[in-house]
Length: 239
Image 1 (spheres, rainbow, N blue to C red):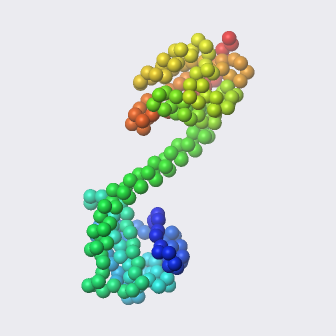
Image 2: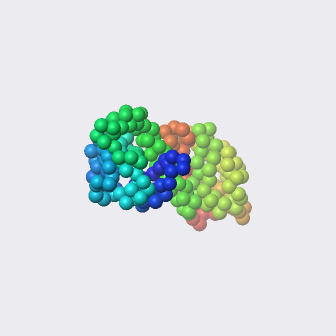
Image 3: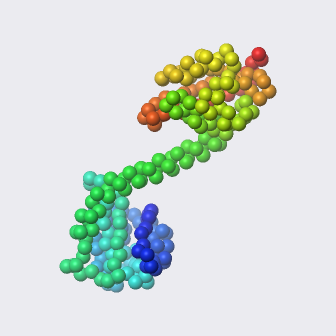
């Protein structure tokens, strides 16, 4: 499926772009599918002389005034990571097809496209994770390399009855029972840190036992990890 397009200023190609956004081509299907399956560039010099099986968006392309098209694979080693299509207003004969020049010019794009795909996949994964964190009935929080909390899921507010902002940094330690603060601060600095029990002050002033499961080495050492806090039910401890 098409992920991006470029159109020269002043060129009317709205119908072709709309057809492209709707089109999903399997390997071997149409020009893009053939190039993807073979890993080789292919040119259709004159769209007026081919059927829709050779180019799936034939009607939209000819209606927009295009006469020829080139499909070029973007490679990382032997792997095709993208296919680019270039349209021409005039037919292209065998002698004047710029396939070789275009392929040579686009050779360095392979690693760039792969990186863009990886970044997009990472963003989608982060969005899914954030959506889960926003809705699960447990508290998730993330720490930076210094062990300071940089994110709390919304479920935090149901524990002490205080805004998330007050727990960021080292603020969450202040919500623990005084007898647990030093021990938990030391445990928080340990790597790896075992699951730990402590007492958290609830909105009514009582303390409830919680379990903290910490995973260090998150993002290959960039951060200290995500900490999952699970409330142990029905265990209020009075001071």
